[in-house]
Length: 203
Image 1 (cartoon, one colour):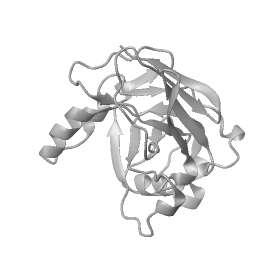
Image 2: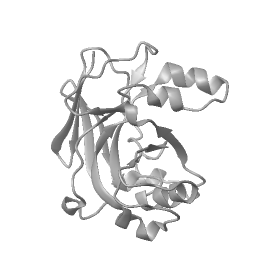
Image 3: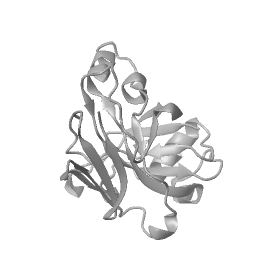
């Protein structure tokens, strides 16, 4: 399976929504980056500056190729929260040479993720609330209505380049503000529509 991430996909307020949109920022992460909820994140030795990014994650339920945005929801069979961790120092070094995001986003444990839930409990994909607390303090808060590229638009673009297969995961982007560095001893807790679904202690 593959994990497809979308970068820079949120605005703080609907008034900031761009009138013209180009191609979304798309990257992939390895399956080995997944970390189930409740397991400890061991901060990688390769980085001194890992940041959290809470995101809605959608799971592909059937083979998806050249799908139009209007039909995209038919190819999704689950939703949950994930934390798209980024080694900021590794990313900065890569950007200096115009390199990819792969190492900064793909280290072991770089994608803490909760169990998937059925879409039946989410009648409107474009209006889903989620948030992240760190050590009991709310740090990020988002709603899918503030996505620059909707889930349908993301699937349309991605499936035009690569076939999405059952079990593949789409990370739809993090809220535009609130990301910060993870410190050893931090406990990150994600909420989906007010329900605690993801917990990750770091050391």
